Length: 321
Image 1 (cartoon, rainbow, N blue to C red):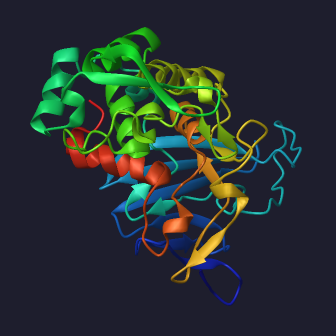
Image 2: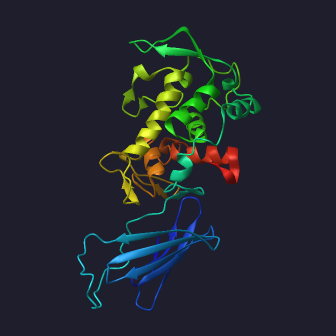
Image 3: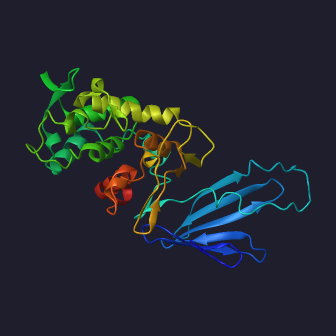
């Protein structure tokens, strides 16, 4: 960050080359900010109610408005006094996290996350066939025994049908399932015959039960991965706070971000926390508590960054529709 002689932030530099410029009024209070991606935020402080309105614009079009209150200040609502309040209340707490053009604070909207009608079973099957994916064919299901060894008992499954059923049953966008599946195992881009059905990429295809602290063998099996992984995504959404956003993670439920470590690479620090703007983003960080995979640095990849990059690479500007 670059500061002026009064200690005010003038410029904030992000890992993707985005530069945020802050503007102040004659009293030294922050009133707006602009960035390299034609984004803008307008800050309006109401000293009577001790609240701050943040209006966000992209390409001059209004995006959203957040109203935030400094909980540490107790200000009577009926006072007409000009009460001094440290300004800004939130901009120095809330942090916009943009990594290589990906907004890590809003991975997907709540409406898009819960829209289960974006792709039918046949559309998913065509999606696999167009990519010559191993998943276009019937999948042999390998489970794990008590020692963690894979075994086949004759069960098979059609991936497209299973994903469609899981999406409808749980009220989750099938594109979210597909992007998660690719993020965790890269099976959609795998060609027929290139991956053995008995491999970890199949029996932990969605990363369900394969946690940072260890593997749950009872969740091994491609069928369990699709049904259980999707159900977990929806459960995380249902269990997320219904209000109070933006929320800083980790909190009492999400206990760690990026293994709890901030890592600096190329002069950029990838922090061990992130602010989230909605329930869907909260749930995705609970499922995958990483902005990126810091072990890959200086290459940027993995984590929820990869989740978004996969989706935008497949579906472009209409990503989740």
